Length: 141
Length: 142
Image 1: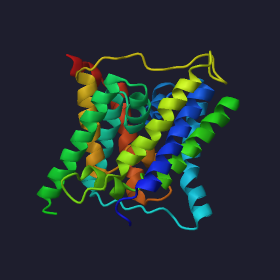
Image 2: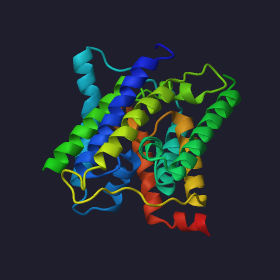
Image 3: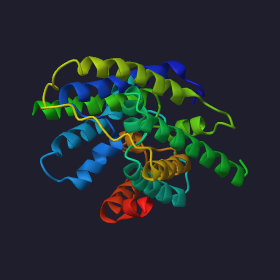
Image 4: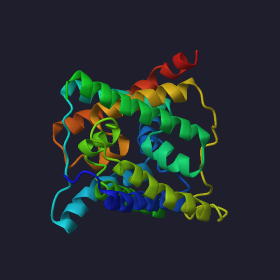
């Protein structure tokens, strides 16, 4: 795996931005993934269909990229089982309690110049960095 | 129907963006969070690219009186920076740092990973249900 990949990162980011704008332009909705998922769990009324379509599109995306580029994207997930379960729970509770994640607060919120989102992004990025650093030191990596 | 197709297309483009930028790879995300180690700043460029397009595109979209397929734009109005926001962000950041997955990549990478990513998804959904069904939000406020 190449380490620092600014161009593909920038291009991928622009596509994420395009998708985010499309959802606002067409449906007037924020492209926050934890919100889209959370809404499926909390509102089983007529507001579910577009959420499922969005998720379906996301699921197909890496398959399409694999088909076009001829190679599957790198995927390395080294976390131990305890970390997978604890991490999943923390991400689930945390994104609902904090009303958003990297997409909702990060992309949508920051582009609206929301101070609330800026605070959230600052806190979760710092906590993420501290967690990785502590874990690496604890495991002697 | 148009609404659903637009959402599907948005999800597809979003997922292609996550794939092209390698944000579907937990190791790549952890390399960004490992700021004191062998730091990989790529995620900043993903954010930067997304913000450039969204900041301009949102403003263009809002020049219209309403979205194409809905009655109104639904933009969050809450501006409070409170204990719920802070504790939620701390929990999310800790989970993100433990594994290298946030909600978007979890969905997009479901077909790439083995059983671990499915277990992560189930735990994440369980976490969302816990937030929904228990008064955890109220405890934090109290």
